[in-house]
Figure 1 (cartoon, rainbow, N blue to C red):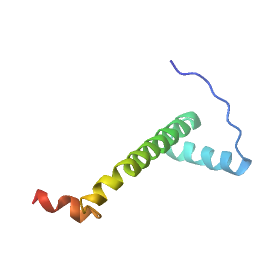
Figure 2: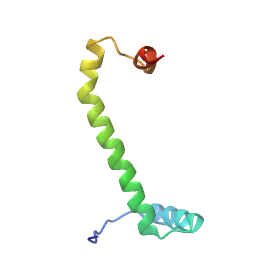
Figure 3: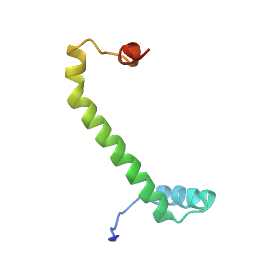
Figure 4: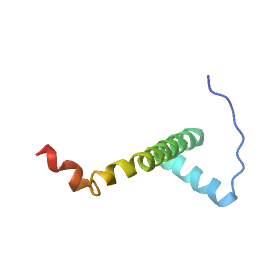
Amino acid sequence: MNRPITVRIPEDLRKLLEGISKTENKPVSDVVRESIRKYVSIYRFRKLRNQVLPFAEAQGLLTDEDIFKGME
């Protein structure tokens, strides 16, 4: 079930959202909802990355190349 939430945003941001809404042919609420989903996903990824980073560094895994070396 979707529950309403009130968010106050500056006028310039509201205008940008409305412009995106028209360009994408989506309601403003859909644009905002999608943006929040992406923000939350990135937030969770960064939090998880920060948790596992010390373990990866301890094993010498510092770059993407280090990760994928063993997969060839």
